[in-house]
Image (cartoon, rainbow, N blue to C red):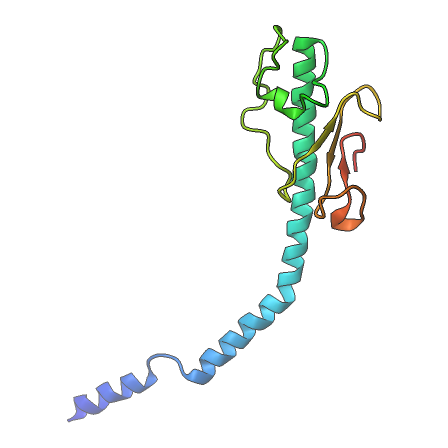
Length: 148
């Protein structure tokens, strides 16, 4: 009989109660409410950094393209000329990009223009979160001729 009471006593102490579970869930919810917004803010910063890095990669590949061909791709040829030989170029030694031309971190196409309006190099623009020219904050354009 003594062993039976001992077993029942262990069963009552094992596991967690509903109150303990509710306390843990409340702590997790509070943590998510306090930390969640700052994590999302870092995600937006990461997108901006990724767009700047991609524009830098495009400019590097365009420099190699110009060394081989003597000029940058035209606006009509666009960034796709870094992957696919334009029909009239014999000096093309690409592809200059290892993968397909990516979209920006917000899934919009980069805007390419050559001759550019800001110097001798092409203009490359990431339109930001809104996908339109101009804007502020997350909607601000990321520009190849400005290092921000």
